[in-house]
Image 1: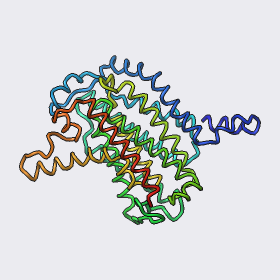
Image 2: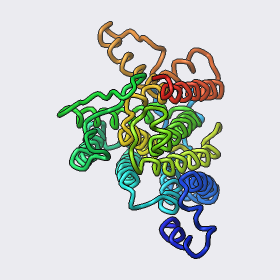
Image 3: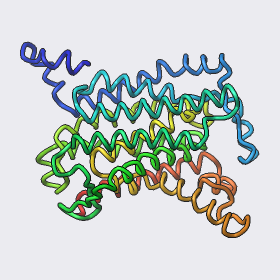
Image 4: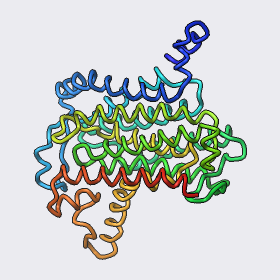
Length: 360
């Protein structure tokens, strides 16, 4: 909105020319999101407490998690508000990448909100089947949009591969199932990782920070040519979105750090997970998400391995508890130590992921 209102004035006042620069708008998107989180966070937490929207701890979790029962949840409302508003203010709203990522974020945020409300009112969410249906529907919508109107001609069903220069894997008719898998997988992976104070939101900030860099590089003709990565005109605008999410995540972490004053709930985790999957899809770097989001992948895989092993061995467990962070909890590590160590590994994954752009 500010971009559309103020940049045209640059012909009269040279100062407004700064609005043409993505780096300027992305940085202030992050600052706006962070400040907005500090402003709206406390009143939203008080409202949730007033309406008794509080977390109920699953009986399967370690006993010490009982102290968290009663903490306000649905904090994803803070996240959605604090990254969508800066995007509306600072991004180019005519940009197709921005339009698609906003649709994805709002779609999954609304679905997560409905699930959280059902849990609050009847003690039971919408169920895994309906969540998957909503995620599949979004994936189908994004997939059809990208096939019918490719972000770059000739690359509608293709994706970049790690370590290979100027080589793309063409999925053909299987592109939409692949795209759906990326969005559904990333959405659920973040949801599974949201089990310790500050854990998921810290790793979300790291992953979106990495994709902010990637978006800028992908949308820059000269840099993308130098790095031998696919140039996508207009993709740089996604860095405004990504850094707005980073700012919103850091603002939310202020309240979500141990001991948490609020949990994000499905409203936040489904939206953020699906958003990062959608960003990966839009930038044609879906495979890179396996590296940048390596800790999220490990969390999701630990759950799948636990289920398979449990069924194959007649009730034995591969991990003490899944997802993986609970295994380390039961192994005697303090919650804060697990969270910080997972953040460190997430930073390492992000750096390794970005380094692969040069190693081609």
